[in-house]
Image (tube, rainbow, N blue to C red; front, side):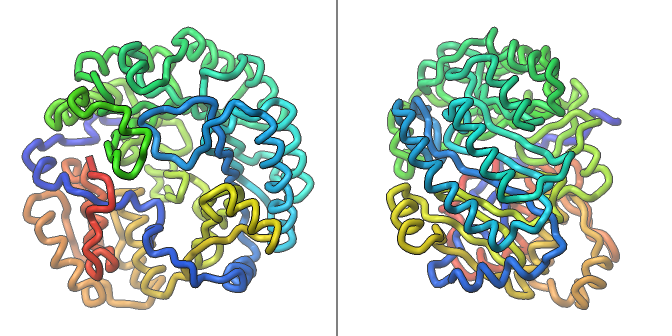
Length: 457
């Protein structure tokens, strides 16, 4: 496999480095509305009864506050709060199983917050509830996000015994000075031990999360973190851009802007990261994700069957996604639905209505068509126009005439090639895939909302 997967064009990256969606869904969550009803959700559950099910469980608790974090979380040291949460979560699991319990579950993911806030006993309790309510495939992909600061190594053994076979470990940066400034000091040796223990226990893969753009980071210092990461050779790597938005996320006010790397330094960190990882044999999956060539994500992308949802890139795109827990989002049938975002409202609504549904959206025919176009581009860097025409019974060039006009600037800059049958994202256009997808987003044309998104790089 060629190491050249990205051509870095500094001028074009700077030209197009404006705000835009990440397209974990289309339409994006900005289009969700509270007029969406439980009846619509229940109808969506019956829409594709033969689809398998992917489950997402949101655990909102964290022991400590990481200053960069923009996730929906609750900082506490009181373990009993998790027991109270599981009481309500089990009710939701049972209720949703009345709608979807006959489906086969091929994927389960615990996210947060910090899912490993749960004790071994609490993890067993939750897995028992899930297995009692749903039919899990024998080879189901079961993954969890791990904070290496607050757990014992033996928790990996316990997770494995409960069926977990994928880990995602939050590293962010190995530099101690950076860690102090974001309130996330951690033991480097313990992370190495975790990755090694996961291999010994037979986990399918381990993902490491890094963040660039944090205070005091430089190209040289982040390169040191990358070298440490490469010695562990994780199957997947996520390298996220830190978006400093202190007006939206109060914790970020503890980060001093004058300590953040400049825009130029930040781009240099990213450029070096891409060169280092692809040079070490990793495949650039898209935006901030990398995988070894034999990883399922990498294989799926090469085969043109990669998908994307609220958990990011996935091989399980033909599933309905059921999210449970506070703030969790579902993608069921032709709709998206989100639970109440505040814990007190989640508790009270579950008690009163036996559902935590807050808002959502039902996709119309145009939404479904544009979702497929955006997914093809963002996952596989190319689009078969004729396949879209056949599936949706349209003339592509006519239907998307306005969109193709918007795409023209990218064509002129040789970032995209449009042929009679194929739209192909060139190597120097792949870092700007979000911008390219925005050309097909009708909601961005209806509303001037770009300022509500993070920058694309």
